[in-house]
Length: 342
Image (cartoon, rainbow, N blue to C red; front, side, top):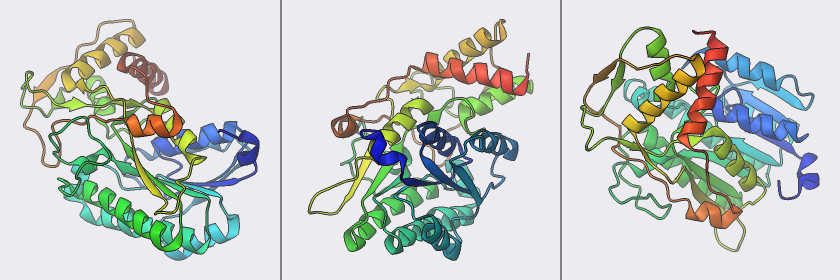
């Protein structure tokens, strides 16, 4: 934090606290002595044991309070804000995943639209110093111009998940305008790392390897026109959030801004997979080569994600910097230890 003494006495509400990013943001704040009220419904979208393992670590901190609640319950959200009077809200709870949104649209409307509306209403009735919320790089849809800039046209989402995240940005803008809520949206670009989400490709690839199954690569086996992704290591995401929390948008206009948080260094998917194989080989002390199955690109997937991070650097003097070599090594070291694989 820029002024740590100022923020140590403040209360932070973190939604999605048992989730990947929510856990790491909370841990960082707790390590600094901040008071964190964590909210999560612990749904079973992926392995609940992993969520419980994250929570157990957070519960070792005296300044941590966990509330098992669903953000789609408006009365409960208003009650939490009334009781704990947060100064800062980091809203990370959401139904994640592009492909899952094609099969289960209800979950996205309930969590990402109604849930976010409830958070905005809570901030309206119990004013906060800053609302920081998760958007997504998926709002850029199939934009051809790269790198993606925050000023780009984002009205052509190619998945319901992306639509809900774009809706969140519009809702936050409106609430900021009407009720003077300082709000910042963060467009995350493919976040990865230890204790990450099992539904993400790098985690799934590792699971498939140990299950003796081929990994599915959705690029038609087209190495020349391979998918590009801006892979962003979790520590970089946390540092970006931490710096932004204490920098709410100011000025006479609408107090709402949107920032990309990405690595600004897209990698070919196949290069990422080769790096994951090398990292896993290092962790295990033996050579690992994945069996591979190539399939057509899935509906809702985009060919490239590539973040411009100029605005973030200008605002908080920071840009993500962790290489995929370092980041994936930390992930595979954790995976081998956590699951006890050989």
